[in-house]
Amino acid sequence: MGHVTTLMGMSGYMAPEYAATGVLNDKSDAYSFGILIMEIISGKASIDYSGTEIEAVYLIDWLKSMVANQKFDSIVDPKLPKLPLLKELKRILLIRSSLC
Image (cartoon, rainbow, N blue to C red; front, side, top):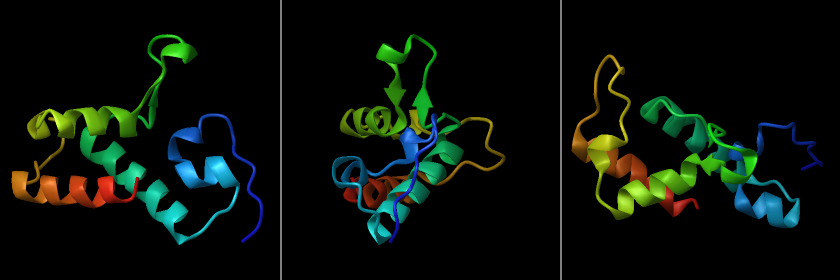
């Protein structure tokens, strides 16, 4: 695969391997797609700049914290038209965390 120029604001979708090696692969795509899915489920952006850029919170780090503290219900955006079943949500989060 070729070299990709990352636009400002897109770093929240960048797979850690790509950031370290500059090489894209299928796992990089799966990682980015997973972040997109988690944005939809949580209603949060891939990076939260509500403070300063130094205090930016990455969605993946927030998700890991929520899973570690077993706060699965707090992950889902209450504005979703239909909330996922807890069993389904846990499955998505486990798949997502295995890609990190």
